[in-house]
Length: 223
Ligand SMILES: Nc1ncnc2c1ncn2[C@@H]1O[C@H](COP(=O)(O)OP(=O)(O)O)[C@@H](O)[C@H]1O
Ligand SMILES: [Mg+2]
Image 1 (cartoon, rainbow, N blue to C red):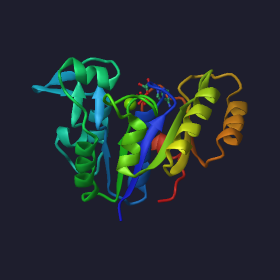
Image 2 (tube, rainbow, N blue to C red):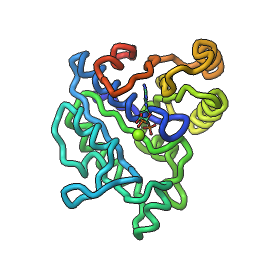
Image 3 (cartoon, helix red, strand yellow):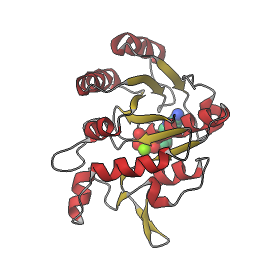
């Protein structure tokens, strides 16, 4: 049975991708084959005649199995704006059923599949559906990445309340230290632990560059 996780976070730019890569490394170190997916990405550049995104390229690079880019990132948009707007700008529509069927293909090929969301939990994907709907349709356990910076307690509480309301399963949260010297980091983590009342799966230290092996050592999740 494939283990699947949906990686969301308190905001954009707070460590979802680094956490996803750290988790991929963690599961690989535990003898599992791992694939990742970034179903929707805005802010892409053209490479080899195809729009590609930095997050999806990293996820492709760290996978156990080599996959074509479009299997990892079926919806790639050039503009770095909310995905439903980026899609609309090119006359496209993000179809969640299409993403689910792509996910099911990946599921057949690895022990663990990690799906990185886009932005935060309630980011719209089309006129009627958002990231929460995608996580629900994929029927995956959610991992919340909290970007440790001023304002994160409020963002985390709102995110967890919305996740609970969506009725999805949550595996826990990751504290992602995106600032080199956050004031009162320990106190913030303690407050968050009490507030969200979910397992803390790891505290990822601030790093000058991405070192998946180093980050993976901070993670503990059932494998
Ligand atoms: N542990 C960390 N230490 C230092 N910088 C980090 C860390 N995690 C993320 N960052 C910085 O934040 C940026 C955004 O992280 P990323 O994982 O791409 O966020 P998201 O996927 O949520 O948009 C990274 O490019 C990096 O510069
Ligand atoms: Mg990302």
